[in-house]
Image 1 (cartoon, one colour):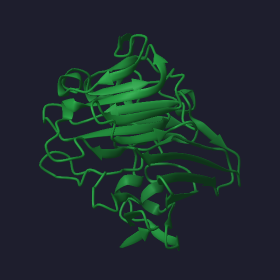
Image 2 (spheres, rainbow, N blue to C red):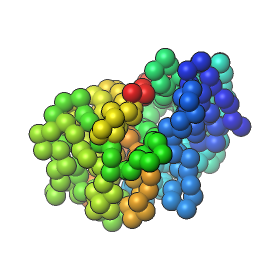
Image 3 (tube, rainbow, N blue to C red):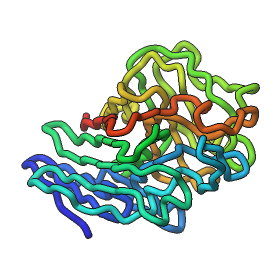
Length: 293
């Protein structure tokens, strides 16, 4: 099921399949979101829950036992329900099922709110522990933006501009998506800007930043300044990705609460960086926003 949102300046579409925002356009018809060409990458705006990234050997140990889960978890492949709907917002909901309990030992309610704003849109993830014991999870966004945005432009015409100058070490992505903290690479060296080129991602796969001072980043054309800005202040990590080896015309800007497994981690979920622990009945909301520049 799809629902169209409008507020006079912007128009967006959400879907119950994966709970995603699948289109975001301005009044001139400019589409800001990648439309999921399966020949390159079929995703658009997947929700990463209850894990972010890959697990080591595809498995993780919760206090309740060992479980296997595919990269980024099961929410992105799940059917949500449309819990609430207004002219400019929609709330999509996912709860546990026999299928999720085979992968993840907790009862939960995940509510995703996509809302149009005067300058763009906001996405909020509200996770509630509906079970009897402590619940552990990670969560993140994976929004893919068209890059370039306008006809006649190139991917290489764009830059990522952070709010502040950054050093920006990034963990190396190894086989199976497992991270190696021993050989971090620096893509930001005392600057606030990173010029985009596909070779960066052909080499690194994903840029993973965990110690940024900036709480926002802009994707902008180097000459015109047109583009967008994401505020990710609620999230401790940021991923930046496009499909390696495809010269793909999109870039994913990904606010994360948690990340993929490290090669030297214990394998216990509670030991992973930035894991959230919720008491029974507790709920936590994390949100990011995007504005058009």
